[in-house]
Every structure is written in structure tokens, then in C-alpha cells.
Image: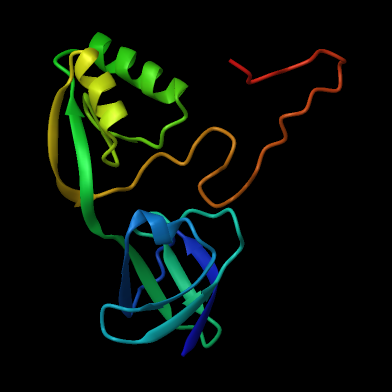
Length: 161
């Protein structure tokens, strides 16, 4: 089994094989997988990284694998206008849900509560299968660069609702 220990990110390194993974596994730092060509891999990456479509991973031997977002069940919600799209992003984002964003559409994993909310906001829902490659979030960079959220000037800061 090859040990994958380095995430090269969206580099130009040519990949000799691909690793197709669902979003659930792309969030983990330690797991076993099989490449598209049948190579057994053990991933030992820094925790907190979320692998994105197109990331390149390097084994200890120098072999490079490209990450591919697997087709999986998703809900794609389409907005008729930019105001409706912005409103939906605000309300769904306020729930801290993981979203993939496109041109007046957003995508999330199936969840009847979120689907109801999106419909209530006027979006047209389409259930289907597609690669799920969501935004990485404000406090966790694409490759795990965390950002401090403390304030040294004595003012409190809370996310309680």
C-alpha cells in the first residue's frame, strides 16, 4: 500500500492516476482508499484539510494522484434572480450548512429541512447526482490554514443565536 502524506493542492504536477472520493471521505485526513487504476492507498494528511476537485496528492515515493469529486446524491437549487440567490445563500449560510455555489444555483446534500427552506425562499429544486465540491468556509482555508478568531481588545464575540 502506498502512503499518501502530502497535499500539493491545485498544483500543475502531472498526475499518473486519479482518486475518486465522495465528500464524506474528502473531509478526513486518515483513511484507506483505492485509486481509479486499482492502487491501494493509505492517506495520512494533516487533519482539517478538505480535499477539493483537482487537488494533487503525493505519495512518499513521489507518485502523484489527482482528487476527483465523486458523483453523489445532491440537491441543486436554482434561483430566478440574483436577489433570490443572495437571500437563499444568506439563510442557508446562517444555518452553517455546507454549500457549493454556481451561477444563480447552489448545491447541498439532501436534507428535508433544507429542501423545505429553499423551496420557501422560492428556489426550484432538482434532486440528482453530481460531484459535490462545496466552498471551504470563512474560518478554514482550502488547505487547512486556520484563522484565529480571538479579539485582544477586550470586546466579547459570540456566535450564540
